[in-house]
Length: 258
Length: 324
Ligand SMILES: Cc1cc2nc3c(=O)[nH]c(=O)nc-3n(C[C@H](O)[C@H](O)[C@H](O)COP(=O)(O)OP(=O)(O)OC[C@H]3O[C@@H](n4cnc5c(N)ncnc54)[C@H](O)[C@@H]3O)c2cc1C
Ligand SMILES: Cc1cc2nc3c(=O)[nH]c(=O)nc-3n(C[C@H](O)[C@H](O)[C@H](O)COP(=O)(O)OP(=O)(O)OC[C@H]3O[C@@H](n4cnc5c(N)ncnc54)[C@H](O)[C@@H]3O)c2cc1C
Image (cartoon, rainbow over all chains, first blue to last red; front, side, top):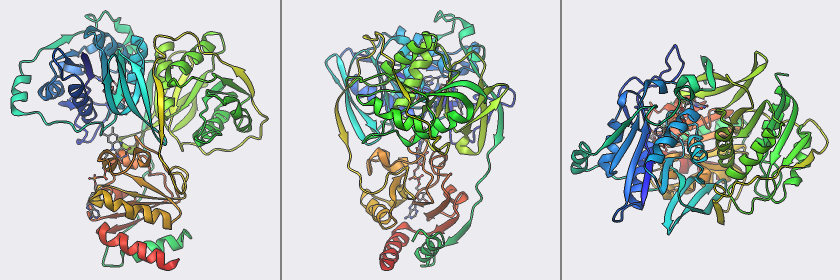
């Protein structure tokens, strides 16, 4: 079985984000890391494709030929990676990104495509279904458990009030939530092995995509303004001296909640 | 009026009737559009005609029963067929729900139109609509707009608008059949698991008591449930303890969980990560209990208690019980 996992490489979320003052898009010029949300997808894929002849391929679109996030996934155990990096891709919206990823994923001829429910930095949560629609595949989003059963996948899909068991023939796109599996830490051996694993570097032209369809040129939307939100001001902060509960009760009484 | 025609994706709540966010979107659609129409699906979709009409929809397109298939593919295909049939609205508002996002994403790829997501406000600009999006955990608001021709697709977060009826008559129901999508319409629900819930719904409760990793262990969540019960509220959670398996996902508050705006939000052992804050910052009053004085949750709290949940919460439970 061939499983593709999409891995987004993003600016470290621990560092405060900033928007480029000219394009008003997220500043992605610094070092990028693997989005933590994709940790779960990589682990899930490695567990599902652990038989003889099974293979996990990572697919990423990122600026400046960035591979450090991909190396993390390769160190966890993925066999190879496809990276699409091209100046023409700067400023892509989710649909533009989906077009690129769909073309790149198709090269790996997958039985199953795993992505995260939403990324940490852009979190539109629409990209995986856009990819599925472009590839003509069914999709199941919000998986909290996945099992492969012959030629179909069985997914426990989160719902408003619990979960649904969903059956879907492969090939298919499935998005996972954090907590679907416990991601492994790459071993030292894995980290060393990752250095020599193949990363296929592709441009937009390699994928046969018209550059006017992607990047800022293809984005059918623009940011017109960025402003500071009205801040909520902090109230009274007190150290509990054994009276904390009473203070809460008094606060609730004053609001007539109790 | 910024634009002529707006569609709203209307969803049926568990137990029947429109979901609250459906009514919020219809109300906002009335504010920005001259004509409001709704789209829905399901075995008993026509039952929504009355309520969506009361909130301003003149027409209800009914995609019909999906036979257990997930809605993303068939509903997007039915919408695309309506649009390609010459009946295009200027904008479509989707709720930021499981099905809303799936349908919007599928439709976006079908129509080759982008979609603006995580919308919390709509404003008129140059005869069109611009959308507002909180970024960096809500510290900044980005305004965005579509540059191409419509329909403009917006995925809107719950609680962005207040629902108000217009007193309109029941909407006229028009069938919107699903075209042939045999190859992609293959994901089928084979069994549903519904968790039991007592007390008010998390996103409708006047009081929400939430617990986070600071509770220490799963068993301590019982204190959160007891407090919620004593305050006639609902029990919420940070993602950290949902991921850890302490509580079901339906309790999660935040960016990937529910948006809540109760009269009082009581955060216990929650650090206040930006993704948590976007889901609860709109609460009227916020009370936080955290042992770390520097925890970001205190920056939004009206009353902050720097203390140990294992001491403060049992005392609070006792005090509330004593009040009866
Ligand atoms: C604050 C902010 C708001 C934005 N709002 C919008 C918007 O409203 N509409 C819009 O069209 N664009 C928007 N964008 C741009 C959008 O985030 C990018 O186009 C991005 O490349 C794809 O969208 P996503 O990360 O939001 O996808 P999501 O749908 O959130 O991503 C889901 C999953 O898809 C996979 N994935 C996503 N991107 C990649 C990638 N480059 N390589 C490999 N795998 C990937 C990952 O597994 C990821 O977890 C926004 C960006 C920012 C920073
Ligand atoms: C894409 C994405 C989406 C996300 N969506 C959400 C979301 O929807 N909702 C959400 O909540 N999070 C979300 N997160 C996760 C978020 O970033 C945080 O990791 C999470 O909110 C932390 O949960 P927590 O506050 O319970 O845990 P922690 O951050 O570990 O905080 C625990 C707190 O408890 C305090 N504490 C410890 N012991 C005690 C004690 N004895 N008494 C009192 N206080 C104590 C500590 O001081 C600390 O402040 C998301 C993250 C990503 C990347």
